[in-house]
Length: 106
Image (cartoon, rainbow, N blue to C red; front, side, top):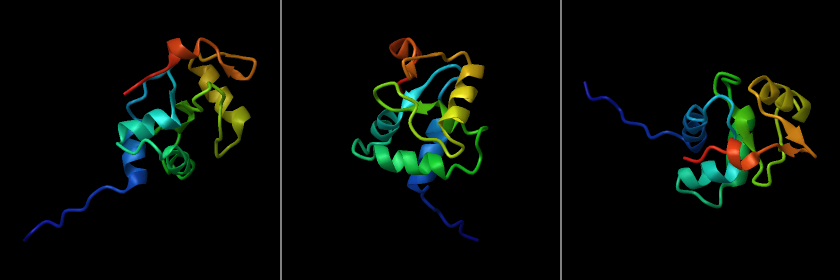
């Protein structure tokens, strides 16, 4: 019996990338879009994060905006900050403190 091949949806590809982000680090919506070969798809990455069915096991909370601000989160930005704080991420002036040092790039 032939096995049917199915390519992964964009959302599924995003969720796989999310699993690569190490504990205690953040990345950006744009970095994920670039890693997927879709550099103009940062909003689509955000939408995929919003639909993440396996949060927090698939850590969409580790994705922030390119300027280091928190960005959106299904449970609200305060909940996102709380999860990141548990991982040692600190905030100053509404942005990730030591953003360059905490930034994970694919």
